Length: 142
Image 1 (cartoon, rainbow, N blue to C red):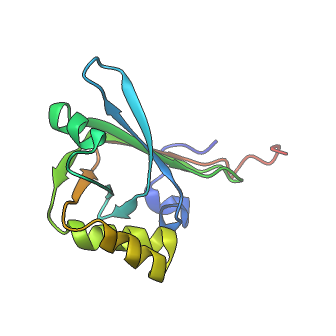
Image 2 (tube, helix red, strand yellow):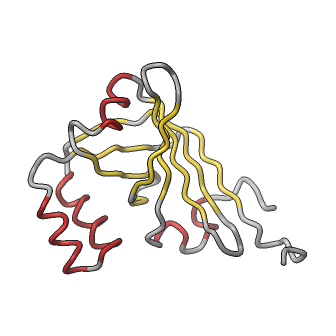
């Protein structure tokens, strides 16, 4: 396994509409794992949520968060980012639209983004601790 890769060494992984898993912390300290749509931008991840979403509530109380994106097929590449997340409404509408179009296509993505109205927050995760890997050098994987 190749370790300590830079995001650009993962090829197109961060451009693909892969579902990521976002980890936030409940009040009792246990972890909530949530499948999320994401966007890799300017060296970090953006995820959109509503202001009353449980993930936003968790981050307001405890900003520690992690996100992981990985392939389920060869070369089994992935990236994990652990960081202190921040919530912002800045550029939330355009971010939601880009992410929605990425996952649903232009027409359905635009309709989906429009259905949210203006109550949108962006969860921004910037490094922190970045860990990226792949199995591109593993020739014995069947």
